[in-house]
Image (cartoon, rainbow, N blue to C red):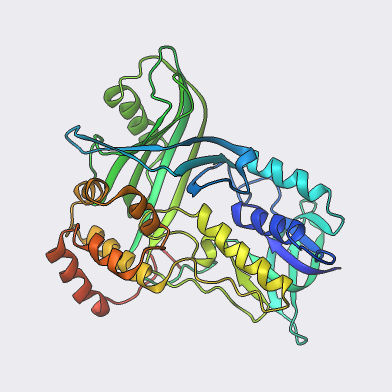
Length: 399
């Protein structure tokens, strides 16, 4: 049995960020002991991912930023183009492999950090206010860890109830073209020249890292993921039929599904166990962005630990932002608003820095009101009025 100050379950963006912050961030005194529990190789281990966020000035993880951009572009379904400069902000991309390498390197210098490969079966509170983790390693041996605080980044076993359940699901190819094909200075944030599904919406997303290289994604907002063949067909159509890339070589690919829901994510259960990351509500329901909110969440936890307070992860977004997201998700799910038109209108009518602050939940009330006036007001008001009457249910197929 291992005993530790802090146990972190899961080594995705949230788990690694928290381990990094609490182990290296203490300005005075010894850092707490940490056990980081990683799933053995297999389906429970986080797959390769690309994370994007925006930032002003130097950041904590600049050393592993793959690329960054000051210009964002959006295209409507008819090909009309809008481009915005976001400086002094920059739109950043980090690959999960590079992020993990950085964190692993830094944690190796921390004597109080221990890595354990095991599948967690149960986390329970103990009478003295601590918590116990029961797990099984790759050889079938039982592993037990007692911790003062546990931070769990795994998806909840039971999906929370919500009025709206959508997914942002996608597949991306990091590819190389034979001929110069990309403008490395601008990101195509949403390109709606893709066939639009019913229900939901789809778009292409292009993160160029050179004239010949880019991450090209096909994304849908909808009730369920596609088959592997359907993703590849959609990406092939977008790369060749829409972008006209010609001959390409796919260097690697990524696939994912991000919850878009107005569910309430419980961040504490039992008293010494906390959920972080997507499991703790760090994903912005209306957009799927998560990485920056994770950093705010783990910063708050680390500050609480350093000052001897209960390290309850704070809400990643203010209540007003979550309420506005709930209205938008319901409007999209009912087809009451046209998704491509909605997002293109916001992008072209809201100042870019204000829009990004809005997506981070950092705008003021008067700014939110001004942004709301750029949306289909009658449809949004109708949706807001009916929302309290819509029952909360688990997602389809949930047990």
